[in-house]
Length: 480
Image (cartoon, rainbow, N blue to C red; front, side, top):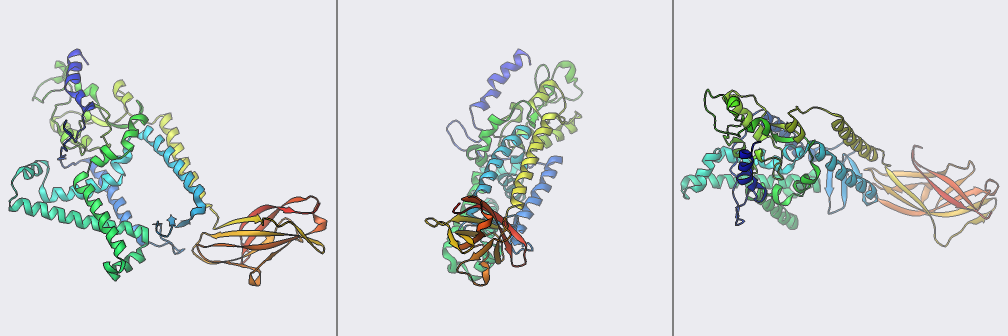
């Protein structure tokens, strides 16, 4: 850019660095009247959001062959089910691994793809842009009509439009609160609660009303401020993105030219004059749901929703200029004038993301149905019973499935070894679904097979049909 353009940027456009788009200098809220977006990317986002919203509503009512829902997060009874697999407090290590994977995933994903998650997958964006704003557009009209309605007196038209909008917002908030409750309580329990009436479960009903009010507040008033003021992801973005990060970017080289942007004039040779392709129409700003100007570069308020890309492409097509003035590209692509392409870094980071997901899925799928633990009973040593040395062990068995087990224990290491379950009939352990059971078991091994005072033995746990469920290695105490 020349000196004139640099001065313009410093005096006019750099103020965005010290101001928030949704507030004035006194800290008063500036309401964002986003123009209704349309175009290729908006259509893609509509498809993605529809799939996600339908999945959100339908999933808690689907039960897998094992009788479990796909997801359940019952914090009241500490019952958690992910992809049909129950998880208990004993699975804390999986939670820890999952948290580590999630943090690393966010760092790598943001470094490569910017805030693509925010604009395309984040529940805040999907609810706001594809439910609440759509209702607003339907009732109050597009941006200019909304601004006009906001300024007019509280006449019959305004009362009807605002009242009907707020009522529908409240109904939607109540509906999705019940959907979230279905994930917590289970669909069957939720339906029964509804049939019983609110006063039969008043505490739950009161909590539902409070959460619905909070949900309504966020999407009816707080809106984009959840992204710009509350969500920590936007703050992370400034640290994680670099010159190679793919994000929604304004091609300032093409848009500014030699002397900067200017209004469109028919039959003008802008290239000869030195003007950029940006005709300063302001449509990218009008359509932005967070009220920023993408031409100022990467900003924490930008959620990569691509609304500005559609708006700019539409204007460029109308004036006969090439599209892509605002596009998915890295800062390096813009400065060097090269198109975004798949490179070694993108492949490597994407492969790392996939490997982490595969590893986490593998941990979940290969988790044992019954968690087994055997411990030496404190204060008890070995005992001699004829030709056998006996150890008394305490067992802890956790059933992580949805059905009852009848288990037996065998000594796998020694052919003549015996396992005698104490305080149980028929020599098997009855283990109810989702329950922890403790008890005592005697392990007997012939003296002749023991050559050390501490011998590792492999205990095999089987179901009543002889199928191996798990195994456990523990040291066997002997007199040698």
